[in-house]
Length: 145
Image (cartoon, rainbow, N blue to C red; front, side, top):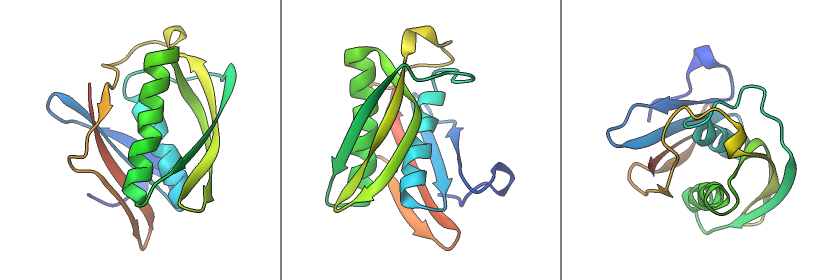
């Protein structure tokens, strides 16, 4: 994966063109912010989040053996909430815990936001990465849409 996009700042995400799937890359100074940027990137890949405000709070706690598994489980939670509750996180705050992360999703009703693309159905393991580099953390993930 390429490093962070200097024009985009110290933290961010971008949707990467990918045949028949959605691919998101994210970067930030810390692992937790990189994970949060990945969540934002996934949601922004199919909804316009401009001006979106959370209407309910969801506490999350993810534990896994590897950092990549934390990323997958976190995004699986996003897909699950979209499928079962029709909601998406519009603000994400994460903190480290032993073996994972915990935090808060501020959720909005997905139906109240403009649709800009296909909604994710599942997180794939193809091209999955979460790495620490000299400029901070980067991750990339592909989603079935």
